[in-house]
Length: 200
Image (cartoon, rainbow, N blue to C red; front, side, top):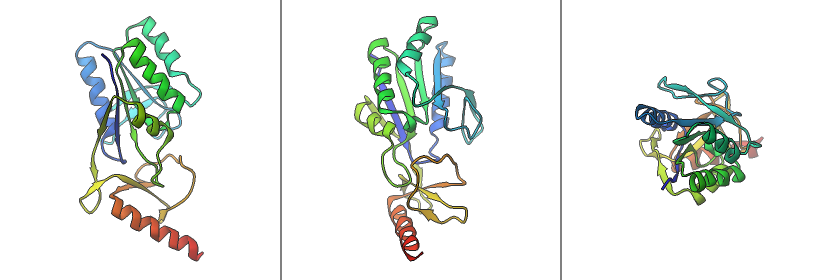
């Protein structure tokens, strides 16, 4: 029986690298994986999943209006899909997560989702919320804070490197805008950011 997996972490834990390795493993066995990535994230080019260690592969794009059940059903009718890999899955909508459960349950195709659990405010993304609720398997990919503890939070910072405590949930960026830290250092940075904002 196919299952839905949610591989989650803070930034820079190797989510895209792990996804690309999974894709390679399927292809090596003569199987056909399909990769999707969020259209909103074009840091490495449109329709690409790229890792920081230099791996890259073409991907289908999804936006918030796309029906992934319909797309994958059509693809599977043309040629058997053996696995679905979703990069940047935090940007999925609740409806799209439900559509992916249908792919698992009705088409018996495993779906592996890779993304962030929380945003820079420590709040769940919509996609992550429902993946946590509905996935068959949850897998945490770990990275480390500058202090050596597990990093499970993400700080957004401005051009001068100061933490930002408020703003839009989605703002695409990499190491130029975000850093992964442990909860202790996250709280310290946000407290400082709130104190700075209050003094202005």
